[in-house]
Structure formats: structure tokens, C-alpha cells
Length: 226
Image 1: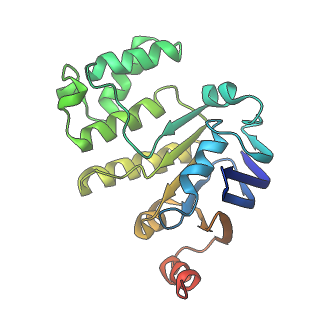
Image 2: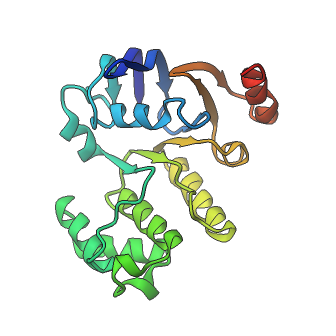
């Protein structure tokens, strides 16, 4: 589902991603685990065609460096920072996204139901709590039933109840044959959700972990001398 070879990304003189290689299989919940500044968000932006880079990449069979719009048509994206439009209501924003995705109104009703937004559908987004805004952002990513989702710190601002509900939703979605690529720095969440985890450090994938029981120890060993 995702294939990356010799990926390099610079921001001016800063080498952010360094000869990065990665393979993600269909149906995986793949976790990208690393500290702040390791390159997680930049990698997601490259894979979703939001920023240029150098390397050989395929995302759902498409080269995001050459066809960025086509990639974003196929995938769902939850960015690291909330970006809901302040002066639309919840349902107005979902209808707007549905129209762009060429979906009918039933998709909006489904997302309002799935993410428990019924009591907020007439609320203006600027008046929502941070947790509700986050649920709305996640709903817009799932609305077109994408085969691949990119989630950048998706549990930020969610209370423990909704963390579990969203976690269960993600796991169930992947079991239907869809693929999740999730960037996080929260080890316990990665253990509960992911099927495999890649540890990123200074712009490189330094380890792929298949057995997640001892993920915390493995992760800390990689950074113990930093």
C-alpha cells in the first residue's frame, strides 16, 4: 500500500528525511513512533503530496510527487493541527467535504452518527471544544471510506473515553481490509492499535518492530544515549 525508497527531504539547508525506506502492507495499522522533530509530520506530508521531496514513492499505486491531487482523492488525512473552518457549523463543514468528495448527504449523517456529533451538528466550529473539533477532523477523513488513512497524532485533545472509541473504530476499519498509517509519540496507544511500528529518529526509520509487547523498552533503548 505504501512503498518508499531512498526518500530525502530538505527544508532549505536542513536535511529532514534522510535516505528513508519503508514498506506498509494492505490492511495494516502501521505506527510511526518517534519524538517531536523526528520527521513524522514531514513524512506524512510527503506521502500525501503536500510537499515535494526526492525519492521513489508509491501510495496506493500512485506517485504523490507527480500526482499529489490524485493521492489526496484516494486517501483520508487527519493533520497534526486542527484546521476546521471557524464560521461553519459542524454539518455545514461535513456537507462541504461531502460535496468535494462527490458524496450524497447520507455520508454526512453516517459520520455524525459514527463520531457522536448529533448534539453539535448546528454548532459553529469556533465554539466547539478541542476534543469535539478533533472528532470532526477524524470524521472528515473517514467520510469517503478511503482505502488508506494518514493520521497524525489523532488522539490529541481526546479524553480517555473517546480515545478508546476512536481506537476501536480504527481497528475495526482496518479489519475490513483498509490501511492506517498513524504517527504518534504515545507508546501505549501504539501498542494497543498497531500491527507494526516503525521507529523514526533524526529523519530515518531506524527499526521496525513486529512484536509490540516490549515496545517501550525497545524504543527507549534506541534513545537512551541521546
